[in-house]
Length: 251
Image 1 (cartoon, rainbow, N blue to C red):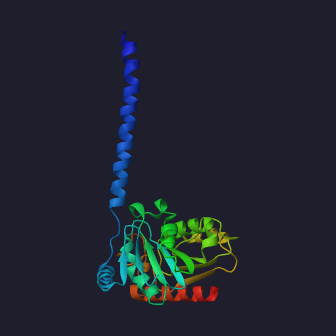
Image 2: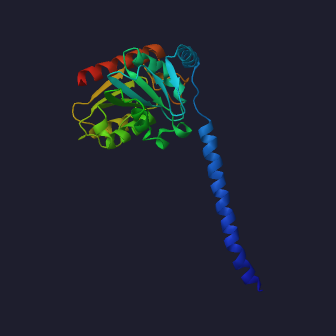
Image 3: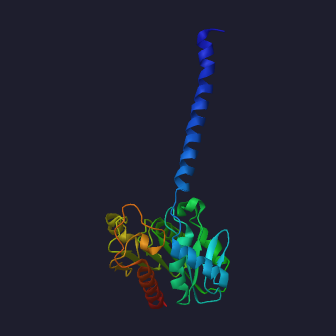
């Protein structure tokens, strides 16, 4: 066999090996990226343990639930990117204390991008709830809006926490509330303004003075974020109050 023929036969094998190496590197890189995520802080961890022990928190492989399932209003919460869902237990508890059934969705790889339709199963699991809202923080908010764009008939509204809707909800008939902290150093304000046209007319935007991006959960400081001058507990309480005002106004 000629040298040229030998080289021709080796080339596909070398190409296959190179492609396999690229795929392996991409997979390893992805798992390295997703394994470095924000863990719940001391408040969220302690509260989760306390509520679980008293039966006030139920956890499955798809979500963390607080509140009674036979209530008027239910809220599904999508976590921010690479944030453990348990970090949102303090906010969920504030919502549950106002009489809402609240479910924090668990996302594959802690990325809501891979679990956009998670709300469907969580809502089906609580048939006693009469009215559903979907909420999301940061990337979770964008994916919550994406879900709402194709399930508007199942929802009353959308709650965007330091997030914006990149999908068109303008004709959805949904009530939309946007809330973010004045010291948020992560939220893209330009994108927030540019995507405002995607929201229904009459949608509200509230700025939580002194709050920041990470303050909607309890997972420590986030790269690029501003200081939380308000305090995390106060930000959870103010957020819950804004949610309650929005829900009651829509009723």
